[in-house]
Image 1 (cartoon, one colour):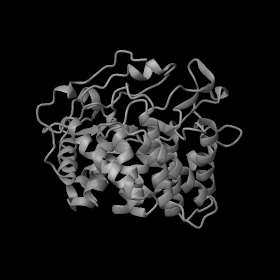
Image 2 (cartoon, one colour; image 1 turned 120 degrees about the vertical axis):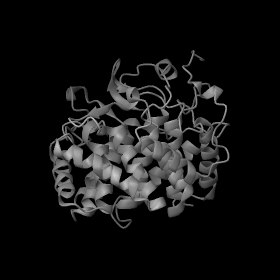
Image 3 (cartoon, one colour; image 1 turned 45 degrees about the vertical axis):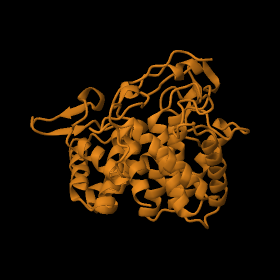
Image 4 (cartoon, helix red, strand yellow; image 1 turned 90 degrees about the horizontal axis):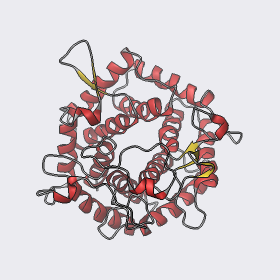
Length: 372
C-alpha cells in the first residue's frame, strides 16, 4: 500500500539547523513564537479591544507550546518566556476563556497553567487549577469502567488516546500540588483501562481511538505517531509525579518500558518516526518524532530506560533539525485528525508548514536535548 501522500516543502529546505545546538534550536523557535512570527492562519490569534495586543487561541496546541516555554525559561533563565506565558494566562482567566467543558479546551491548557504556577505562584492560578481539576475529576464523562470518554455521544463509548495526555498529567500534578493523593489511583486506572482498549498486545503500540466513524465497535486502524506521542508524554509526566512506592507505579513503569521498546524499534532509517509507526512508506511526522525524543531523554535521565534510548533520541533530534529551517519554520507536522476510518486517511493527512501542533513538541525535544 502506497497512497499518494501530502508533502510539505520541507523536501526543498535549502538551509536547516545542522550546525545549531539544541539550546539554539529551542531559543530560535521560542523567540519566534513569542513574537507571533508564525502565520495567523495556523495559530489563530485572538484579537482584543486593544489592537496592539495578541493572544494565542486557548486550545491544547497552545497549552503544549506554553508548557514548552516554561522549559525554555528553565534552560535559559530568561524571564521573557515566563512573562509571555503569564501574560497569556492573565488574559485567559480575565475573560473566562480557560474552559473545562471540553478536554481539548481545558486539559493541556490547565496543565501548562500548573507549570506556570510552580514558577510564579499567584492565587488566581491556584484557584483556577482547583476548579478545573474538580470538574474533570467529578464531571467529565466516563465509561462504566471509569475511563474518560469523549464528551459528545457518550453512548458510542468513544475514547481517544490523546485524552491520557490532556488529563492525566494535570490530575496527577494537581494531586501532588493540592495534597490530594487519592487522585493518583484514578490516574493510574486511566492508563490501565486505555491499554486494555487501545493497545495491540503483540506490537505494544496503541491505536488512536475507539468508536469513531465507521469503527463504532472497535478501534481505529494503524498506530498514529502523534497519538502515541501524546501517550509518551503522559507516561513520563505521570511517572515523574506519582510516588514510586504508590501501588500501581511499578506496573505503569512496566507498561511504559514495553511501549518504549516498541517505539524505539519502529524508528525510521532517517532517525525520525513515520506517520504510521509500522508503515515505513508513510511520511515522517515531526510532532510525534519530537514527543518521542522528549520522553526518551527525560526517562533515560531518570534511569527508567537504558542508554540505547538516549542514543536513539539524539539521533532522532539530529534528524528532526532537518525539518526546521534557519528562520525557525517547522515542516512535516500532520494537521489534526477527527474521524480516520482507514489507513489511507492517515497517509493523506496534510502537513502544512508551521502547523501549530509542532511548535510545543519541538521546543520540548530541544530543551530535553539541551539539558543533557
